[in-house]
Length: 307
Image (cartoon, rainbow, N blue to C red):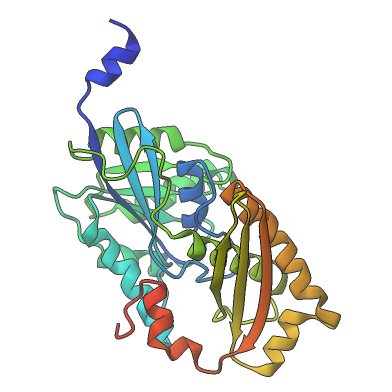
């Protein structure tokens, strides 16, 4: 029997894996690396991921559905509370949880606080995933592991570098053999459930953070307003960048509109790559004073307005 037919004789499996952790521990970088393509935007700015984003990949005969969640932090505003609520709800919705920790961070107490909020149930394994191992000494790693596993029922502990791809095969193999037997829940070639209009908006938001993360608060919002597809596959896209104040609008536009032009050019390239067709992108900047308190914006992001 060939190895291929052996593999096909294995039962199909599928399931949801929640990736949870504090802000900026590398959750989006990890999911993009596991899925093998960019789905979730990455930024050094905290609280970049606002909603639950699915990334889907096949490993052997298993369809793994990863849920990238907003980072856990102390919420202050309505948007903060909605994001934290989405992060804490994810493990209850999944078949398995990866708790991602950054050994370089000094906030062990916050890591432990998050771990305490995660339900350790026998039928839903929780794995501790320690990221950025390429930047930490072995002695410090041992101390980190001991501090986190003490009195906690982690199913497994993994040491990885999401950025360098170290340890990811072990993580994928573990998930592939541990998820429950069952039919695949998405088409074989699907890599996310996120609508392309929303993905395009997320790409533009990533570029804004890339160039303006020092000057702007994270509470800006990008909305894809129009999407027109042509017969040759090209797409004409119109987006609005919502900011809270006139001074922020000036920052996004830049002198003579140069800043928003640069943001738009980079976003257009990435959106074109994502679609496999040429994207024509037009961006407008609008002052929307209370956008972070508008129910419709929360619904678009899949967040609970009343969290």
